[in-house]
Amino acid sequence: NAGVTQTPKFRILKIGQSMTLQCTQDMNHNYMYWYRQDPGMGLKLIYYSVGAGITDKGEVPNGYNVSRSTTEDFPLRLELAAPSQTSVYFCASSYGGGDTQYFGPGTRLTVL
Amino acid sequence: GNSVTQMEGPVTLSEEAFLTINCTYTATGYPSLFWYVQYPGEGLQLLLKATKADDKGSNKGFEATYRKETTSFHLEKGSVQVSDSAVYFCALSGNQAGTALIFGKGTTLSVSS
Image 1 (cartoon, one colour):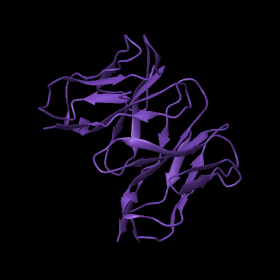
Image 2 (cartoon, rainbow over the protein chains, first blue to last red):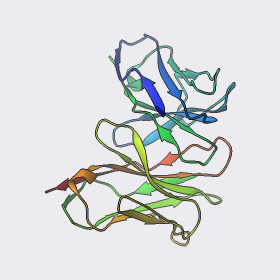
Image 3 (cartoon, chains in turn green, orange):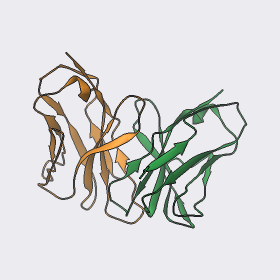
Image 4 (cartoon, rainbow over the protein chains, first blue to last red):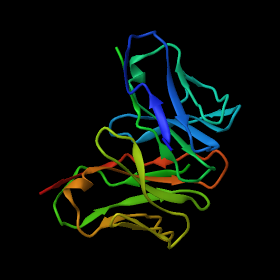
């Protein structure tokens, strides 16, 4: 099993550009999550999904969108990039709510 | 709401020293508690967990006990190694649908030989 994979590993965007961060898991987990990690601030939840076709907002959803058309994939979309979105983004998955979450390697995004 | 507070870092130790990283939490109900570790340039990996009061999680020489009376889940290791240098995150998760992890801010551990 590859676990949770994320692409790209690094990306630099200009203000106002858009992009999609990809996340795929091969563990047949129902739950998937997107977090952002800012220096010294721990991780904050952006969006989560409890199954295909079902998504919900987390603590910091503004400026992001998600979709969950399959169990395996949970892409995160940034429509109009802003410097405040400079961060490291982690995707995670778990079998159920409250279960151990498995993390991808992260995407380091810089918006200039 | 639910929250996690862990000791500020960085923590700097010599090899074979004893490690304690404090973690306390505020939560309603009966959360599960976790310690995750993040090595430089990598994602988070589960280190250990406990799902109910008085449970002890352990892995790779690390231990933590779920103390409901003190709302704590302190991480300990008797003898640290240089390879333990990393950022350690305490986290909690309620046992409800869609519950994500709530993380502490992380504690950086540096071990020198």
